[in-house]
Length: 256
Image 1 (cartoon, rainbow, N blue to C red):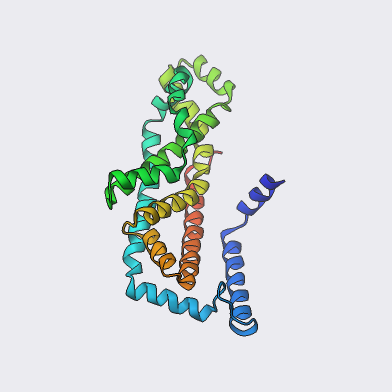
Image 2 (tube, rainbow, N blue to C red; image 1 turned 30 degrees about the horizontal axis):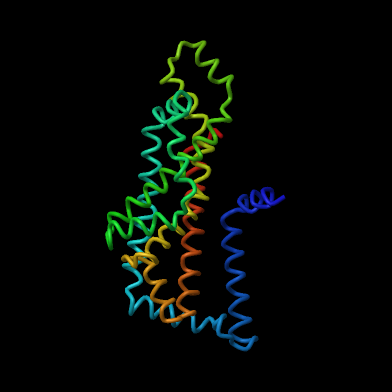
């Protein structure tokens, strides 16, 4: 039932998603600005606006936001391209040398939070290290999806390709990879949301130049207004990013 509900929510048109968000914001403004008595943990919209302007002016929010979004979307693009260009070799390993995959088993039990701390200790306050960390996460996420989806390949496609005289490498790159692409890149929406969370955690832990470090400062000063204002802003950015990714998926992988 939960899967069906998630699927139904994902099928809502972008315009309706924006309408829902706008309606929730309007309800929040009406209730907490004019009706309810202000409480500490749910500040008035006017206070949130003041907090946002303070973040923009005093903490250089634009530059920090540019740094974080650059890492997220460039790593998302490069990680996807890296898998695409190496897909033939990755599929060869998955199908012909599955034992190699077992080497990564021990690392599955470590949390991303652990790796974020390790990277920050190894490469303190390094933009390049954060960028590499994000690319590795994207690559690992897509590889995991590739391993899962490769077990669901349609054998009739492979048999038909063999009857036409295609060799193994051609079957991997032209048949199996083409079949799996819509499923693999259909998971980019989930990856996109996870990547925002991972990068913010990395910046929060290491206090590097980014929105995550700004979250740390707001938390340190117990500024609930700034934390909620940042949360709303990032939620809107994730929503817009999801809309763009879904649009590109429908245009590029239309044969699903």
